[in-house]
Length: 458
Image (cartoon, rainbow, N blue to C red; front, side, top):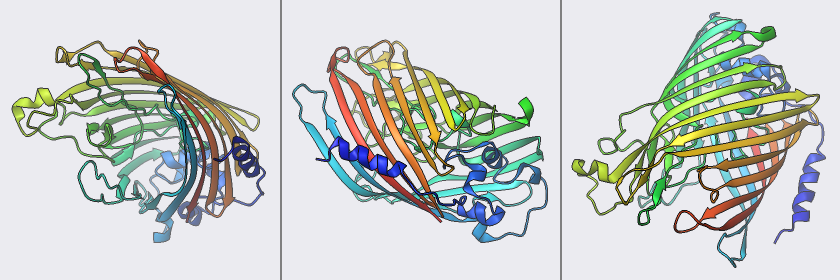
């Protein structure tokens, strides 16, 4: 078993990195001859220049509406490869359980970016294909699943001036175009609440126990997004976006909830809200050029959830109400961040309201309130090396104290330059587990995870 001292020693070695010149993402670097530090503090976190570049459709804001340069295919193609070494030890909440330790080195996925950038003076496109290890479950169907997915695939139209412009995107898009605390962190996905805490509680059925659901927000979905960006406070931009999404689907054999854009389609004709849409409003104000900003988001969605009644024929339209119930949920969140010298302080808070279901009366029960927050401190040792620590707490049901989850994460992000990046993190997670009656507390599960990720993009 790998000792804690060895894990911490590896993190110290990562922090004591060399200083090497960095370059931007290859396709944009080839087109604009920019360094990573032009758009990022520590990759992948964006500074104000990089945020404007993305918000303008991967072009400089003063290029909107102007004739594009000569098209060069290499300026629109990039690829990323990820490998992860993970060591995880877990102690189950069941009293007397022994700790289980597992270390593995695995291929953590790859991405191919095609036609990613500004195509004409007003039109931009994004296309990211993800490659993962084939899954033998294939969403519960026997046989190997096809290991290629579509993370984003959209076309956008941008019009206006460099001080204010309108954007319209359609396709499989990311609903979050945030800044600072509402954007990607330098540990790139280590925390439980990066852009809305995406924690799912699958439907539970036991006697008359209430069936709660909990759907996080964030990620990519199929939809349409309209936005407007305007320079406001000391020429720092503010933006507001309104989006309509295809929503979430319930898959009882695999993922409890999946965004339709990157997951399974809604069960057309059977699920009550199969043809309904989700709505989101997102607003952000940049305060400083190096990470300071404030953002707010509201999301209204609908997720069809199985009642766990499996004896009814799923092809019978008359049994729709017996097979599924609809959780019409709402999420509100606010994020804030501000730099102090080379440090950046970040925080976020989210509230939610979900419907619930009980099998005893086979009807809707009391609404479930959820909440979560995080606090984080990052420090940029250089433009290529960043370290930080973060605390997350989520409570999927605030009326009960038996399902809280907390996590403390320490991380270091080192960019070697020329597309090579190394991220090390150590996380301690504590999860209170409800008992079989849904009300009492079984105990607390402890998870300790050390991960070393290597990312290479060309």
